[in-house]
Image (cartoon, rainbow, N blue to C red; front, side, top):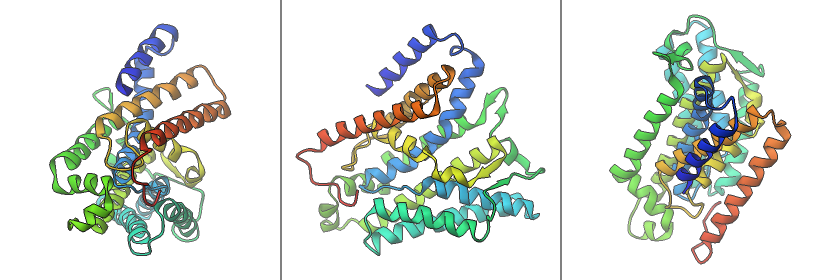
Length: 309
C-alpha cells in the first residue's frame, strides 16, 4: 500500500509540478532521502524488538564530528574512521546498557543519552557547534558526490537496505529480533538471549547512524551539532511507522521502510518546490506522524502492551 501510494504520488507530482520531473530534482530527491533512509533502517531493527533509539542523530553527528576532528589533527583517514566507529559503538553500548542492565524504558533512556552525548561532546572533543571536513580527506570527501553522474548517497542507502534485509531474513540473530519483538517474555522463557538481542539492536542502530553521519559530513562539508535538536529524528520515526514497523514489535520489513522513505521524501520535495514555509512543513509531518501512530495503536489493540515504549 505504501509503495503504491508513493508511486501514485510521484506520478501526480510529475504531472502537476513543472520542476519535479527533472533529472536535477530526481538526484536532489534521492540525496535527500538517503540519510533518513539509512537511519530508518537502524531504527526499524530497534523498533522490531520493542525498543526505540532517540539518540540516533546525536550518535551520527558526534561520531562523524570526531572523524572530522581527527582528520584535522593529521590522523590518517582509516584510523579516523576506525576511531569514529568506536565512538558510535560506545554510544550504542551505553544505550543498550541503560535499557538491558539498568532497566530504564528505552524511550527515556535514549532521550537522556542523546542529551548526555551532545553535552559531553561539546564540553570535550567538539567544543564548537560545528566542525568542517578538512581538505585532503580522501574518498570521504566524495561520499556525498557522484560516480559516473549517479549520486553516491542513494547507492549507499541501497547497500544498507540489502544488508539489513539479509540480516533480518537470512540470519539467526535477525529471526531472534523478530521473535523477541513479538513476545519478549515467551522468547526469554524458551531460552532466546533477549538481552543480547537488544545489544545487537542498539549497536546496529549506532552503526547505521555512523554511516548516515558520514554522508551528511561529506555532502555538507561540516558537522553541525545543533542538528541534534532538530526534527530529523521525527522524520525517521515517521518513515519507520509508516513503513509498517509496528511499535508492538515483530512486524515490518525493509521493503516497507524503503517505500515509506520514498513517500516521505516525495512529500518533503514537493513542499520544498512549492516553497512551503518550514513551520507548515513541520505541521504536515507532525500530523502525518500522529495519524500513523493512531493507526498503529488501532492495530495494537488486543495485543500485549509494548514493553518499554
